[in-house]
Image 1 (cartoon, rainbow, N blue to C red):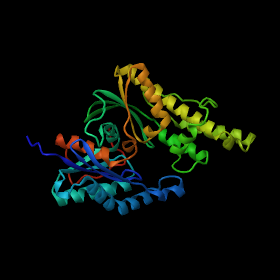
Image 2 (image 1 turned 180 degrees about the vertical axis):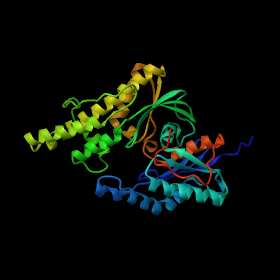
Image 3 (image 1 turned 60 degrees about the vertical axis):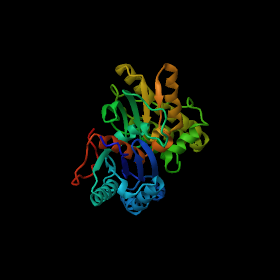
Image 4 (image 1 turned 135 degrees about the horizontal axis):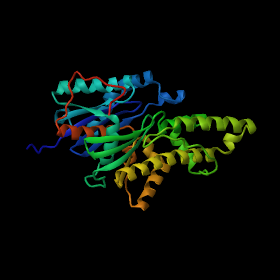
Length: 340
């Protein structure tokens, strides 16, 4: 058996972060992420602008990742890339670049499901030794576009137990932040303000959805009507109670997430859980999930570097697929929706 190290170049371009990373076997050597400030003035991601920015950034980002890792192109074993889900224009940039580079180097191409890669973010590290979950475990994946509960059997076998039926938790955070006039991206700003507010000051309906599925559209609408009603009574209401509103909304969203996670633990009997996705960087959610340790639940949360969209998780998941011989043809195309 060939024991030579496997070097994977990972490419992530699903939304508005252009990222490239290099792994040596399971060790992350570099993880370069370039954001896109152009969306700030629009208060949200503009797909056409995102794809143009990816075209400008992808070569410098890949070059920076290789240099930081100290790895040359001829050392690469394969190229892993995000095939989906995501913005199709953004995905096209990363996919086309990955295909062209793999062809020019005569090395395999490995497609990656972006949401499954978020789960694998729990195994990503620049350290040789670190704490990581043992199989099987449950993963609560929370991002701007997805909210999912996943049973993880091993690195390559995952089962979707439940997901949002409308808005994602991250979208609820961002939309409420926009209602409150907070700067983009609103989720992190809402989290910051919530830390100084009273989470029980205001009550919002949690909504109901069967079994392990989620729903956040009703909460978003409830907050909108609440703000309209209270601001009619007192024009200064939002500014006067801004921190309390943020804390109360965050408390409600986290309560929904934790209730479903606890239900999944009871139904499966699995007492090891992990967080994943951009919203796993939320301080309130991280603290709430950590509280489960008092109930004899083992908890794992990725480093901040691997919470938001990043190529480190793409390269690492690509490594496991490479080892399994799961390669993609050069005819492959990106998909906005990636079947689980």
